Image (cartoon, rainbow, N blue to C red; front, side, top):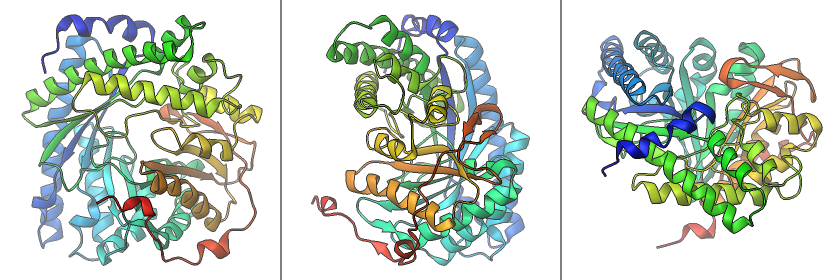
Length: 451
């Protein structure tokens, strides 16, 4: 696809005044051919590959950032799910591999490295179980490694044994890290996409080539500007205006992605067109919803407004590129979106309303601070509820919950940097333990029978 410089220059105003950026360039790397029966050799192979390609990614991304004047906020790497790599190895292998990934990412200048996880939607192998059991140590002893688990899918149902474990894992990670921040580096999915460039859930899927360069764009500020200029039109006209804007920012992302892949001599993967909030003023998805006419995020009308926004973004992005993938929609992270956080503080946005919103957004319950004394079984039950939405509706849903030690509902917590700040959300304390302890596997819904 040929993309002209003139098209890119249209984004200059967006970049200067509306917080438009390339949120991430994420290089997926296959590590299966690094496997060796000797753990030290295996680790050495991993380290050399990550540092080599990581440094090249940083260098080439910096050149394009200067060439086009569009900020590239994060440079990341995703790798083959670690559970696949350590299957024949001992119990210490997952943590040793994770520390090697962390060291390589640090020395290469990579912001985050994803893939420390497993695909266990239908059951767990011994290797999967070893990785899951290692997650408290991994997430509390590494700085840049992100973990994931895919525990459910529309085709397979939900692995409730894995869901039970996750509640326990999050409690352990929370207790070992300041303000429970280690939990921010872990996400649990239903229907996880294998080409997702966003952390913490990025991994290099088993259906991917040796390398794949994926781009995550972001433009809440750009869309906000469009909504502000169209205060009086009907919803059809508003949708059209958002679609045109999504088209422009997707084209810019496509140009950056293709040129970066070409310069690195790796295949170009996808453009993820998700609107991703930041802590910057004017870079909020919740603010877009409120500008549409909803009094406060979480108020009646919020779900409909968010559905319109997601649909318009997807239609505009799909028209701009034949390589749209990943999550592609709208993130609604509480701590990373100042207006979302304000809505929590005011009481307009509750955990239950957030769950309803996730039925139409692209991800799920994201970056939500909950009381530190929330029982592990209650955390698992919240996860099961959210992933059920994905299973039944054939869409991706994910959960990033942060039990904050010593904090109760209404307390304030600052996670720092891009992770933002949040008021701790109230959790329904009615017991769900008897349901969660049943374990087993929830069968796939009838909608999975599509052949």
